Length: 133
Image (cartoon, rainbow, N blue to C red; front, side):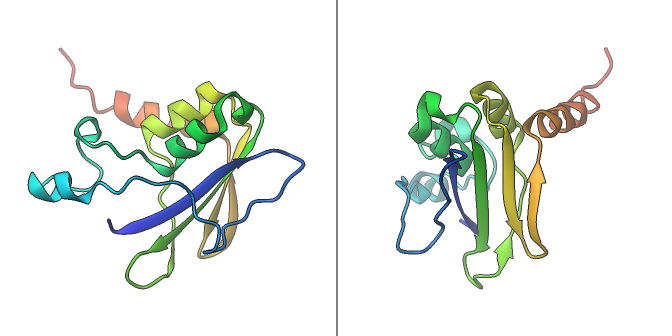
């Protein structure tokens, strides 16, 4: 695991807590990835772990509708802030769960993302990669 990302779906009347003393439930799944030499970001179907966004949605359930999702990533070895946008699968889940906005912490400060726009951006990049028949 190169980057640790913490996140949560937060209602409008509450504040996110990303402090180290506030751990989120997680399943470590490094053994199977190492055993089969699976690169990071590939073959999600053989891993029992889920991305941070998915875990937050599973924890929030239907209460995620209309929420703001906060994401904060850190390089595991250096502790430096890191940001990778939610992947195609996560952006699709954010849209379907009705998350209103996503706020990420980057090296330059906070950045707000629209889940719908993020999903469309991912979709357009995938569709352009489909070869013509």
